[in-house]
Image (cartoon, rainbow, N blue to C red; front, side, top):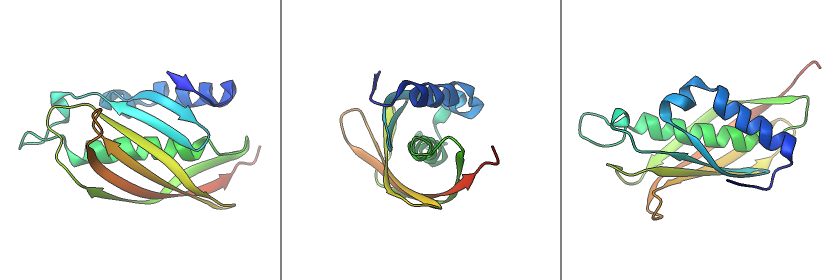
Length: 142
């Protein structure tokens, strides 16, 4: 796995991946991380299919939300946290039996909010979905 984050930040991101039971259910795997940008892989699993044999849109949305949240998190100071305020998704193509990769990028980092866009693609580069999310920046009392 390639990483350009400072080790403590990368270790924190890796720790969050390993500590998220839902990310574990989805099988999420970090691919690449740098400040403001995270790539996560979701391996294909039949447990992610809906009744028509396509990967469920909720699984794709969750992949994008995790990648976006971790990209936002990578920009925070030590005494900051963030939470998703809103997120929208455009489904572009169906996914049947392929892995997918979400690449999330911070496009705005303000004092109180972070805006992140993400694309979900197949390993061959076929665009499956695109998202836009806004996160609130929370100051901790520490």
